[in-house]
Length: 255
Image (cartoon, rainbow, N blue to C red):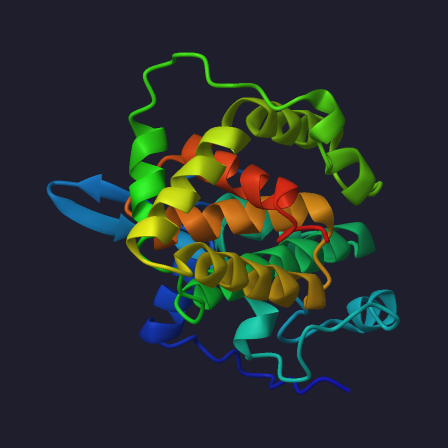
C-alpha cells in the first residue's frame, strides 16, 4: 500500500526545479510554457501534480487498485510531475484510469530521457571525432562517391522496431557519406594510430548500454544521435544522424 498523509506535503523548491527541468520547462500534456515573463520577472505558472493521488477518495482507491505505481512513497519524485494549472485540474477532476495510465506513461518516458541525458556525461567519445564532425558540418553539397546498394547492411541488421522513415534516412546517409567518413577515419589513424578503433569501441560500448536498457532500434538511433550531438563540438542534428548511420554500416550499432 502506498504511503499517504491526509495533510498534503508541499514539494521543496529544489524538487520543483528538478521536476521543471525534467519536462524542459513545458507542460508535458499541452506543451504550454511553464514560466512567463512579466515586468522583467519570471513567474511560475505550473503546479506539481501527484500522479497517484496524495489523498485518494474511496472511489479513487478502488479505481486505481490494480494500476501500476511508480513509487510506494506518494511524495517521491517518481510520483510527481510538473503540469500547467489547466492540465493539472483536468488530470485530477475527474480522476480516470485512462488519464492515470497516460500520466504514468508520460512520466516513465520523461525518466527514460532524463537517464539518457545523465549517461552522456558517463560516456565520452574521443575528441578526435570532432575533426570529422567539423568536415560534415561544412559540407558544401558536392556529390561524394556513392556506396553501392549491395554494400548496405541496414536491411540485414534492422528489425521491426526500426521506423521505416528512420531506416530510409540511415540508408541515404550511408549511401552518400559512408565512404568519405571511412576515409577521414583512416586519415586520423595515420596521424594518430588506433584512433578509429578507440572511437568505434566507445560507440559500441554506449550502444550496448542502450540495448541493455531495453531501447528498441528507433529509440537507440535517436539516443545515439542526441549523445553525439551533445558530446561533440557540433550541435547539428543532421551531422549526428549521419555519424550514427555510419556506425550502423560499420558494425558498431545494431550488430
